[in-house]
Length: 302
Image (cartoon, rainbow, N blue to C red):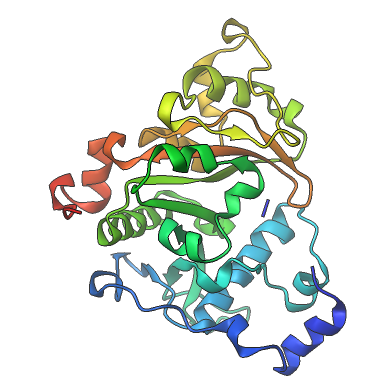
């Protein structure tokens, strides 16, 4: 989904790795510089230090490699962090439990949820979008010159926190980010657990028949990776049961009006089957925009 010799990993531990690899998170608008939402002991905001980014990476390692069966490369295995070349220039949205506890029972703020955010203006200057490694998104971007895209990626939540509160806080953070940067569309890859697409025939067929992106928002998996999603006829499954069986993240995307690209991608390194998500902000369900981030009219003009 989303490689370095062991000696490089040792240099990281020893502090000999080039400092630019852990550059301080970039400055953000004032509206994003503090708390973006809070429910009880849970707070959502952008990571403000290198240490907080590392905490998000450790959470990702725990979820992706510890729970999901992803295969760590030597660097990840040594540092116990999921990190790649994109992290240095992305913003990192985190949920913190201020009453989290260590194994010894000591109260310690703990990062329990995370999202990686990459804007198109940053992607153009750097290494492009992560999702372009699996999907041909160039035609989509070309059809919308001047539009501001935001790629959502590396989403994860600690098992004990996978409930309504954490998900709602993450969405509050995303909506605040959308408004601060006047984002026009959200894109990214979402995953189903397990890298055998045939095991997800019902889920993939449901998305293909009932939530396919079309026309100017259509996107197709790269030719060499493309796995057809419409494996079953629409009459061969119960759409309500298919919807209920989808991962919470994908169901959440559907609720706000997301559409899905043509073709799934088997990511064997991360043991997932990926689908492409596209959400034009203007077409997102206004009820959810208002619930998570206030009235749509608050979105500033370009």
